Amino acid sequence: MNDRDLQVGDWVRHPEFGDGLILESKGGGESASVLVSFPDNSRRRLMVKFARLSRLEPPPGPPSRAKEGKTARAKPGRKRAGGK
Image (cartoon, rainbow, N blue to C red; front, side, top):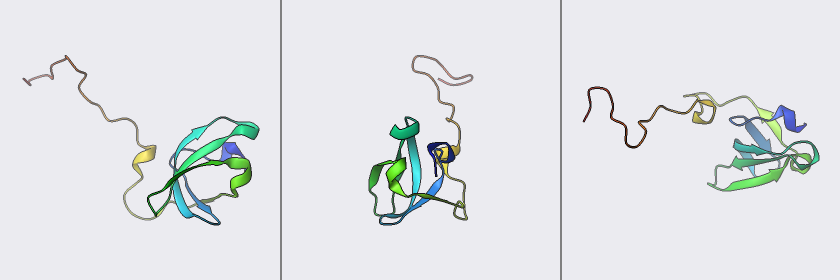
């Protein structure tokens, strides 16, 4: 698997750590790495070329928040329409 195959929000399986969710992707080519959250509440930065990750189908249930866009929030110092 190359670094182009993995994206934030993808579910992956690692042979030692189990199934996890990609939270962040950095770099490319030989230096590509991903930050993966695993069920034991650990987060591990893994080099893609060494990690032996395989992509999984997303688990059933609500969609992952990692692929959703940013939620709209009021900017500091600005008033919301009709608000205080």
